[in-house]
Image 1 (cartoon, rainbow, N blue to C red):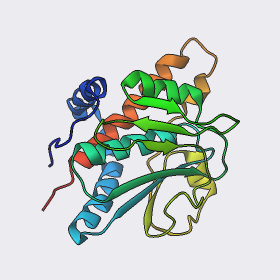
Image 2: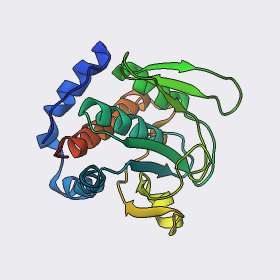
Image 3: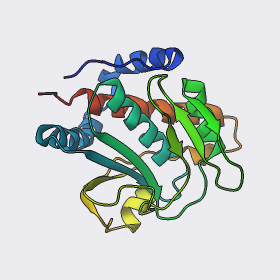
Image 4: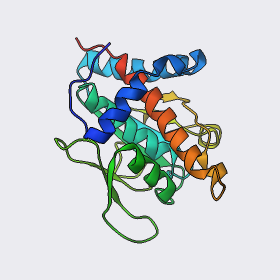
Length: 213
């Protein structure tokens, strides 16, 4: 198991340290799926090859973005070299503002770089490395790496309706419940925060299990 080697933004670091203390709360059946993610990353580390992960949901709006951001952060935090994380959908919409707010509240610094129906955001997790460019796109958009990657399916709809992900060498069904179900309800903010932390907790766990040689 690796330990943290890089410094995150202070407010984010506090949340990450707390989530790392909650790994025991992850159900056994979820850890079984997360081990597939760990193994894919481990294989790349062992072979000294780049590791490409593409987190996919239908609209590339909520869960896939949250997962991508957490995965890139976890790779940096645990000092795992050559791990590059992307996200996409079976169609493009926009990075949902509620999901943006949930990640901002956790401690990521998110700046809107463009306007329009599908704005581009920059998501920063450390002062020592450039931020992530986040915007909605199809999984095979030229912005993404499109061969020899793991397709991490973050929603049941995309997993069930996209039987073939072209260019993927592995497929990991890491499904999450959609916080969209609580939009415009009194539970909205809580459910988005809950999902953002669940995804963070699980992906941090998966990456923490990778062993550096």
